[in-house]
Length: 271
Image (cartoon, rainbow, N blue to C red; front, top):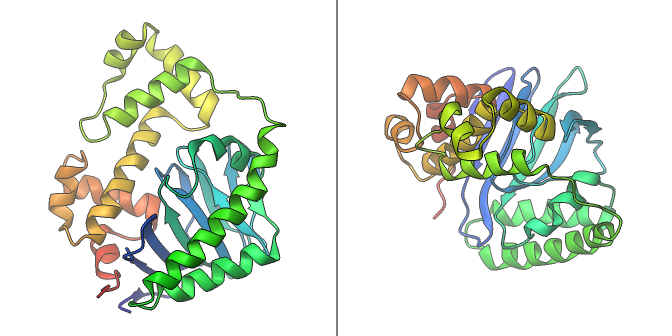
C-alpha cells in the first residue's frame, strides 16, 4: 500500500478487480470539509474513528461509529468533521448493478443505517478488498451486502411519494449528457424553454446545489476514475472537460481534499 501522509490527512484509493466496485477510498481528515457535491456512484461509508456531519437533500445527518451510511448517486451532499480530532473513514463506491435507481429516494429518506450485521459485513468487505487475490471473497461479501441493503430500503418505497420537479430534473439530465463538453446556461434555457434565472433557482431549490457545482463534481468523479487507471493529471484534465491541469487541480482539491497528483500517487497497485 502506497499512501502519502500529512498531519491533517491520509488518503489511499484504488480500483479493485471486483465487479460493481468503481473505487475504494480510505481517508483520515482532521480539518478538511467537503463542499456540496455529487457522485455518479453509490457511496457506502463506514467511519472507524470520530464522526462526520453532512447535509443530504438539504437535511442534516451524522455518522456515529455503529452506523453504515449509504449516499445515493446524483444527490448533493457535503461533509465535515463532527469532532475535534476529525474522522477516519472507509468508503466503497458502487455502480448501479448492486442497487438500482429506484432505491435512491429510499436512501435519501434515511442514509444512516444502524444495522450491526450490515456494519460487520461492510468491515469484512474492506478486509477482502485490501487483499489482491481474494476477489471471489469480496464479490461474495458484496452480494450479501447488496441483499441486506435492498431488504432495508425497499419497505420505504411504499411510504415515499416521488418529488422531483420536472424542470430541475430536465436540467440535470442535460448536464449529465454534457459532463465533458459543458453546457452554457443560455443554451440550457433555450433547450428547456425557461428563463436562465428561473432555471438556476429551480435546480438549486430541488437539489441544494447550483448547476455549475453539480457539473464540476461530475467532472471530478470522472477524473478520479482516470487517475486510478494511471492517466496523468494533464491528460485527465483534457478528457474530463477542465480548461487545463490547474483548473482540474483547483476543483479536485476542493472536492477530494488532495491534489490529482497526490491522489494518483496514493493509489494501490492491484495485481
